[in-house]
Amino acid sequence: MAKNHRKTIIDDAVMTAEGLTYNGVVLQPVVEKCEGCDRIGAHESGKYCSTYADPAGRWAHGVCNFATHVRAELDKGGKVKINPLKASKRAARGR
Image 1 (tube, helix red, strand yellow):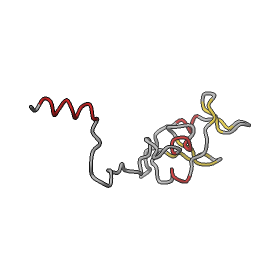
Image 2 (image 1 turned 90 degrees about the vertical axis):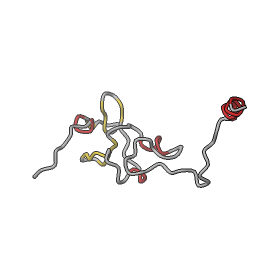
Image 3 (image 1 turned 180 degrees about the vertical axis):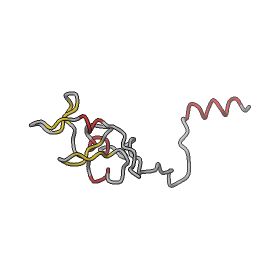
Image 4 (image 1 turned 45 degrees about the vertical axis):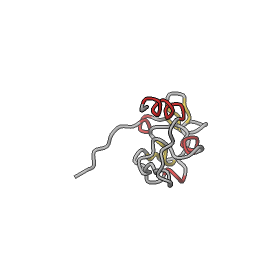
């Protein structure tokens, strides 16, 4: 049985001199960190993210929030950072 294929923006994208283009936006190929994500779509010119035009920009400041293959990790100390103002209000309420 064939796997159901959802239509993505990559299916409607057109190859131009600048690269793969969709609605005037040039799509950039996926980076190494994107491998394994469910949002990657294949085109004859390479693999592209079906959600974000510049995948490298998503990974520049940490984990991509669209990544389906990466789970959020807890702080290694196991402590939750608390806003000091809220902590003082909670302490005052308890008096």
